[in-house]
Length: 109
Image (cartoon, rainbow, N blue to C red; front, side):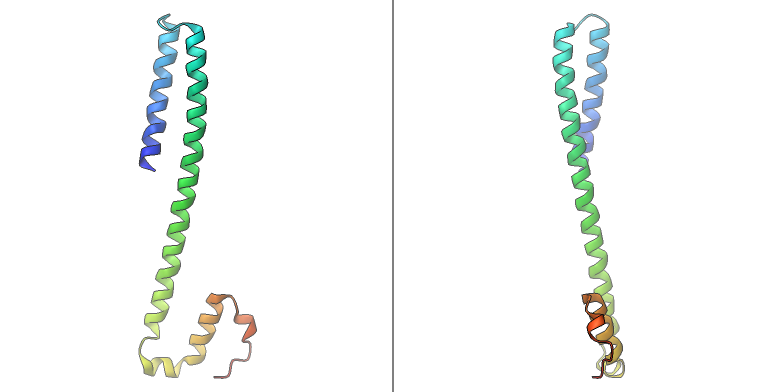
């Protein structure tokens, strides 16, 4: 993602340089128009790529947090005596995380 952001920054600097060159008469209008159109396409592609990468990072972070919560729950019930005393709580918590808690309303284990 850093590459995309730096590419985006480089494109902005290039666009500013093109505008200056065109304004100073060092770049013909036709050439400027072609380069500006190309810049717009690249800018749009980079923006889309940045958005997709940000979504991927967000999904990864959410998955990581879910895994950390699950590991913490497993650690909580790691001791067999604790698990034996709280088996109903354990099963309810696992069922809730699996999205099937409604199927176990009167859990009797």
